[in-house]
Length: 85
Image (cartoon, rainbow, N blue to C red; front, side, top):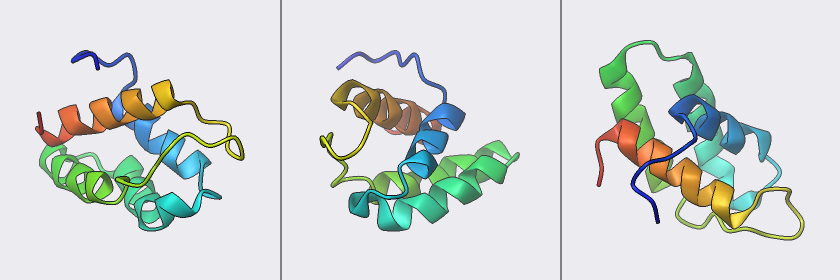
């Protein structure tokens, strides 16, 4: 896994919202929606922690149009925004 993500935190949160039909993202969807509206960097950092805690079961699946690489990039972008290594 690369330390540098090509995806921004906004794109990562939007990817979660766009995959709302995926049951593995149940709680993460609302956290991601709220995260998209945050302008304060510290609040966004904390919100990203909530999102991270709720995307642990997110996997690539033929039913959904998201790839394993996109999931890895999204997690990397959110971790970076949350200050998590």
